[in-house]
Length: 473
Image (cartoon, rainbow, N blue to C red; front, side, top):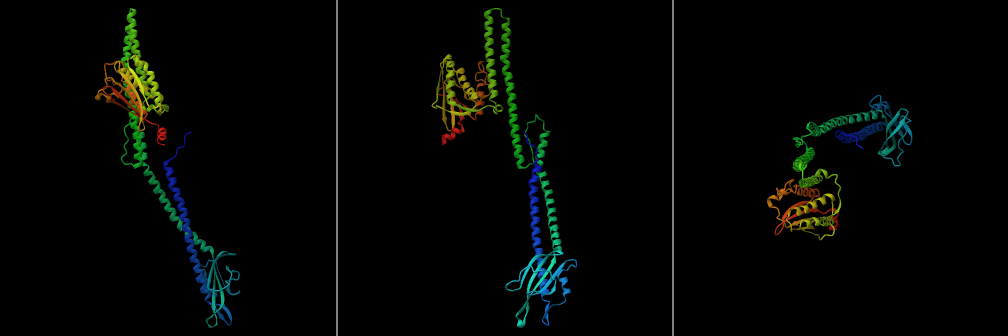
């Protein structure tokens, strides 16, 4: 099931702008809360000062408490004429001196009178009110406190709500402009930051499909350079694989041309023969040529299967290398005896488990034993050894033949290279196949001189992770 397409630019915008929007809302609410808190303090301080100013105007005349010029206190309570305002002056326990009788106290009288101010909200027929209640002492005889006054001053919440709204607008509007500017900057930064990816996309679209040269981006951030490096590595690997396939096809065509041409010539000569003896001789030549061609084709197929590009689908199983070596040596003994050679196996290991492709591993060691049987003189000795050292399985195929000169050892692993160019029995692919299979199993292969003469082909294959852990435990 294919996944839906998504835009990296859109995801970056979402993940950057949503937190900014949330922070903008939180900042606006915090600023509004702080501003309204201080606005409430300003209103409360204003009501308190007004209440104290009214309380100081209370006078006792002929034994009665009066408030001088009550109408002059309206501007103190509500500087704006349209604002609703209320006040009341009460001589405790309950004598109304001046003001609105329906303005109820917002707090019960204290048990011990002292100059105290109470703030609260109240409601009236005209709406919500903000009320300040002050308990204020009147001077008595001898300077002692006399009666206590309760002065209440109230203002309508319209001005308070209007102030809160103005604070909200004054707070949210700059923050909104700020978030808009920040969003534009973020979008510009994302577009500019993703510009190298756009350039890489354009570069890949303009490139010819056959062009596998490395990509070059001069001005690009580190992450894009890492992506470019990965693409260049992939292009290099692809280029090497294509080059290897082209060389393989060219070499195979060249190597197949000679035996097929010889086979055609032998069949033409056989068609001209008139005697049974001559025809039999020509048919034997045709058979030998066909056998060499089949061997060459099989070697080419094995080499193709061992190529790196074909390893993805090659199954790997648990293979007992010790058992495989013993079986292959036993199978090759009849051919060695027919060639007049002594073939033996030396393996102190009863088991040698390894993860690999059993068919390719079998082909690897078959090639080593067959090469030894094919290229050393009659009467020679061949020994196959298996040991384990330093986390590696070491397989050695030793013979006492003429060996290989040091200057030719590196070239032995080249495709279609033969040490003895006049020998028509081989096709020069055996050691190339050995090297490819060993490398596909993360191993190595090397050539050593045997004493007093001869050759040792040494193959090292890594022990599986499970076996290494078991050994460490």
